[in-house]
Image (tube, rainbow, N blue to C red; front, side, top):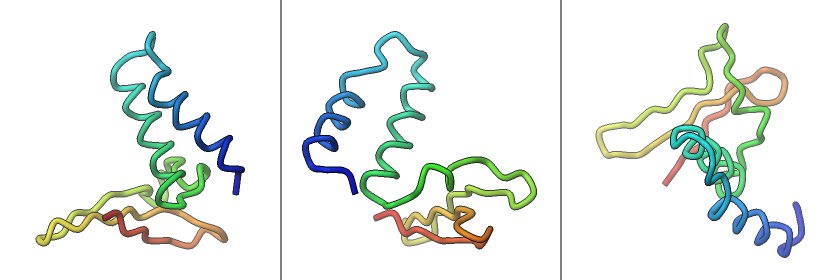
Length: 82
């Protein structure tokens, strides 16, 4: 886990940065950082796998969000997003 000062610097950079980029690109970068920072999703797990059709986001009737990713050993891992 990175030191707190580094995490705070990255949080500031993500919040204030990317001003010259396309809105969709900015939203994607911020989502990736939030998933890494707060949900423990590894960056490699967010890479699209065509054969596994992952990552995939599901929302159930109770509005609970679950992110399905391809984890270590190419095993599916489910991450509950509250």
